[in-house]
Length: 219
Image (cartoon, rainbow, N blue to C red; front, top):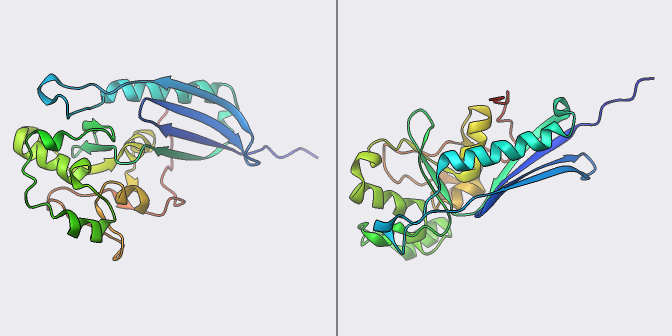
């Protein structure tokens, strides 16, 4: 009798200073792992507050790590993909899903010129369970609105960094409640998104275990 093929899981981590891809079998045994490094830049005009990533550099680094691990296993046996990453870091995407901004958890550019006087830290903490507000996505949006209005006008959605890369893999945008909370855009009691701007939305909010990828981007 022919032995059944063992299914595999591809795990991807979008970290602060680099990314990792690893393949595991269903017993949790690591079959292959690869890492690639990157670093955030500090635009001179935003020093010492602002930090950002080059979307192309991160995409190419993660793609290379994924290709390395898949080349070492039977890629057709990958039954599921999990993408995780740093808390608080976020991506602002245009209507086509292309990144206008990728920012790490250490980006506090909002302190460099955004109007934050009406952000009630206590009220936001009661709603979202997050503090302080100036390190999260709503304050970063305020920065773009005040300091880079042309870019702000193009922002259509806010995603987590792992959500952005998952979108890159499968062409479908989604976020789970824990990552939405780490954007300070989730009402933890009502379990609903917090509206920051009527034009700007979260991706579809789904449980972490729900089906998102139906086909993998092979490019």
